[in-house]
Every structure is written in structure tokens, then in C-alpha cells.
Image (cartoon, rainbow, N blue to C red; front, side):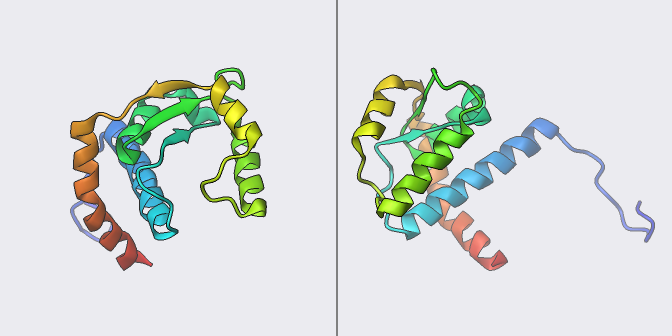
Length: 139
């Protein structure tokens, strides 16, 4: 019990808690991207930064976005700045989907690190309307 006499749940399962946070962030990205008119599923997702070195995160991302996840293996795990630069350049140019030559070259250097598991991806897709409604109720 806590100081007020309320029963508390002291049981936590850290790996499940962490996965839930990751899933929530990616589900939110899907709902927001769709709201912006970005076609879903995308042709691919390019993952940069520290998360690109974690194959479990890559797989969850592939399943939620229902597409292949690529990483630039030459950039290493410290490539978050690359991802930020690509997003900033696209925003400045007003490019939501269109790719520049340098992005095509970048994708050519990348390798697929995760492919969507159709059965799991279908579960996430079925979950999206409820997740979007829940997220909206918090705003």
C-alpha cells in the first residue's frame, strides 16, 4: 500500500514496459503520418541513430509500418544527425514523399535489417483505430 492506504501494483516487467513505450511511439507516428497524407504503408523506412543498432526495435518498426526497415550500415549507430538532416532538408524543400538524388544514393548504401511479419503487422493495423482514439482522448 502507498502512504494513502491505496493498494499499489509493485509488479513490473521491464522488457514488456519498454516494448510498450516503443510500440506506442511508432503507432503514434503511423497515425500522425496518415493524418498528414503520407501514404501508408510507406515504401520503406530508413532508421538512423542508436535505435538502428537494436534489431528488436527495427522489427517492431517494420511490423507497425508494414514495410521493410533499412539502416545505413556505413554510418554506424551515431547517425541520428543524418536522419535529422534528411528530415530538415525535406521540410525545407516541401518534399513529403519525393526523393532527391542524394537520398536515392543513401538508400543504395543501406541494407534491409527487418521485414514486416504480416501476421503481426495485421494485429497492429487492427489496433490503430483504438490507439488513435485513445491518443486523441489525451490531447
